[in-house]
Image (tube, rainbow, N blue to C red; front, side, top):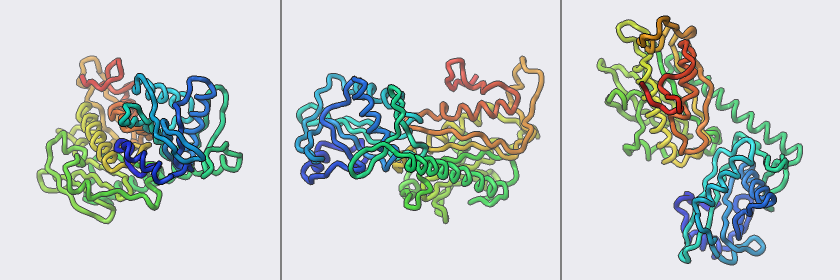
Length: 393
């Protein structure tokens, strides 16, 4: 894999691969022409992509000639519509691999001769193994230094066990953190009132070598703040702590009320004790405010992780604490004549996943919002219209 962000790769970087005789291997493969539209061409392409996802990730580079695994010429591709070609390849990947490959990017590099080299960067997947499902192939592939190969039974067993182990570790982390939040063992005291808890956990966060540049976030106005700060225009402060950095806000009486913690491995934990505070002694969930705050905060947190080059997929966990007896303020609607309250103290909502950075926060969070409205006696969130777009009444 080229040691550079894919959108910063230039013709000079490709020339360096040629000049330094960088050979094909486990994380890089050269191709002279794009995958053909034939069944065999599509199958070969899917095998290449899935093999990278099931191994250590890597770059597929189209538009270069090679001999014995070494680039001999950077010819480029003659393509009438490069965007249309990228869409074709994305569609093949989307429909031909199961489960869907969560993290890949396709980047064209324009050459001085006005032709293109196309780079497909596939990240290692932790929700696999992935198999090719095109044309009833149903084959699992991986890679070693000699290129791709079908996985045998023993390798498949290891791959499935690894995926399950990572997923369980992520869920256990969430459960442990919720227990500490309930016990008020938090970076800043939040109190015993109802809380909104949001976790963003990248699949590779539990790799011991995983580390992000927290200084980049601490010293900039990159948009990292507690959940309620943007919608309530509240002041917040920042400081380093043992786990990384924490941004926290204060209520009018100077008591801490919410925080956002960035861990050194890229995990984000945001806890808010403002939005669900009782108003006029009513345990009311303000139906637009809480969704707006979560959508805007998730957008900001995704931007932070993208700036830190944290790669998807990213697990999103939303939890409401201390909410037994709360109700949705949709009951102010004249057509609603019966109030249903939440029947439990903890709403631990099922996880959702950001598969790529252009996923919209309102789309990612919609299943969570629907579940909260379900708990209040409604079939779905009223803040989404018939076209499933976030459009509060």
